[in-house]
Image 1 (cartoon, rainbow, N blue to C red):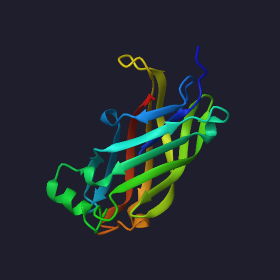
Image 2: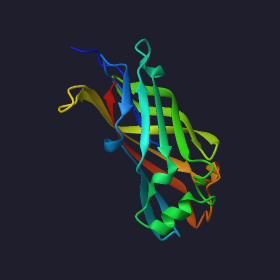
Image 3: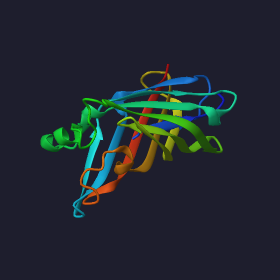
Amino acid sequence: MPNTRLLALAASAILCSPALAEASSWEIDPAHTAIEFSVRHMMVSTVKGQFEKVQGTVELDDKDVSKSVVRVTVDLASVNTHEPKRDGHLKSPDFFDVANYPTATFKSTKVTFEGDKPVSIEGNLTIKGITRPVTLQVTHFVNMAHPMLKKDAIGAGATAVIRRTEFNAGKYAPNVGDEVTLDIALEAIAK
């Protein structure tokens, strides 16, 4: 019976980190990973969107699972709010400036466990060349054999709230909310 260990994420960012045994390295499955976001619009409604291209890894430190590392890279040009004009504006220098900063990254610095389940993942989020600490609260975690691939797999859910202005992406704040809620669903497969 495998040793239950660590890992789960992420993800934003979006993000992850879990608990496993035989495998010590997992690759994020972009087809089954989503980083969604929501932000208040003109104090009237909430706009939601997602990033459609996410990649990354989860690495387990067998000696100290709390030192395991989650790395995620998000293609900012893959932003999708289901409104092409808004998506184009989000890619502009007013927000993500994808011509100069095509990706956002997250790298964990600490994973906190309760028993054999991760409950939070602290790390550094970089957007537009600006790095800030972010803590992901893990809302869901599972470690099991993938029923189709016959490999170890991890699944995790996490949330975080960040401030756009801290990443030089605060155009129209506060009319367009400064706080952005991230909702991350991650699936990763043992390498």
